[in-house]
Length: 226
Image (cartoon, rainbow, N blue to C red; front, side):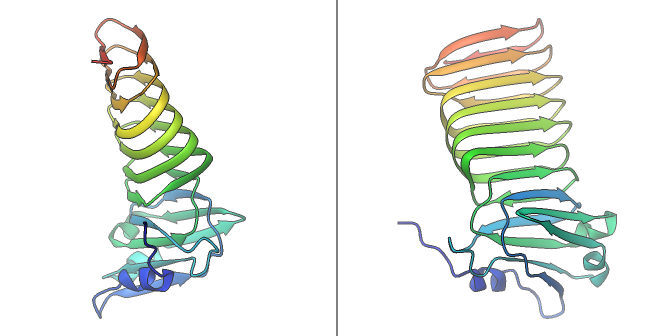
């Protein structure tokens, strides 16, 4: 049985050498997260009723916290910051997250993405999702970033364009679609069906024994169902 840690304890766990600076934002609910700060961002699970939800940031240098902006609009949360915010660690406590996007050289970890349709997007930095639980997952990587996915989605669409890497080998899915361009590297798995479109220099590998449909430009490397 999965054990939930009390949200208050989760927030306390970020803490902090005694001399570290801290800022808090009382955010009620978060379903969509956008990261535009070069910080370390962690998303952890709150209770299902949302009790204890919020955002806390810590940093050795108060200037890193002063450079942060946390704005909530409805169920969407945007974390912004300039280069000065790179030393900050931001912890988001939320009962449910369905979408996350990273548009800065940040290091982002997410405990879970849940929903009928979950989305993950990376244009810079690193995003790791420990557990996907969705009927459909759409994941996009553009540029030199890294996206790691684990968990379960009935269908998954992985799109990569650029020198980055999508590692979804630990994501269980029945039907998979992969589109890879540039120097992208995509690792995935599928149970029943896998469709792969790969441009020159792309590297795609699909584990499992799915029925594979592959269209690959000369120079691409595709392994499916092997």
